[in-house]
Image (cartoon, rainbow, N blue to C red; front, side, top):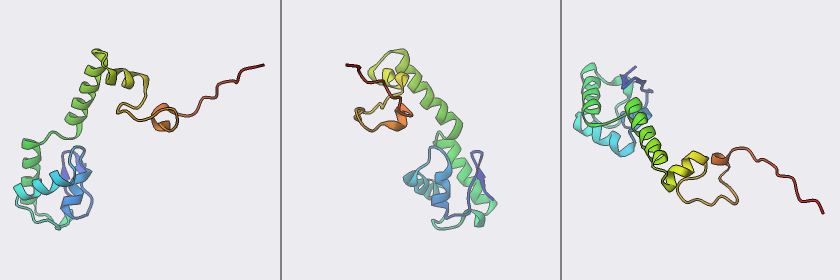
Length: 121
């Protein structure tokens, strides 16, 4: 089993297996395979040790992935919250950040419904 950037790649074609690494999507995976001279469609378990090492080198030298990328993303969010930008305030309140409606929907960000008592007459 191929292990790159601390992730065990599943036995799928290599361009799809690489997407299991946080920070690598479809386009990046194909570019990485091209730079490492690995044929697309080869299964991850069928790669030779040299090919795995070549993929590992390309990813380490040219991409920020996994733990380092997660740290960078969290630092960017923290910076927005520290400067009290609109986006930072939305992160702090746990509301949608990118302009979605909140009167209905947005349950994923807001959490479970909290019922408010109705007015008495």
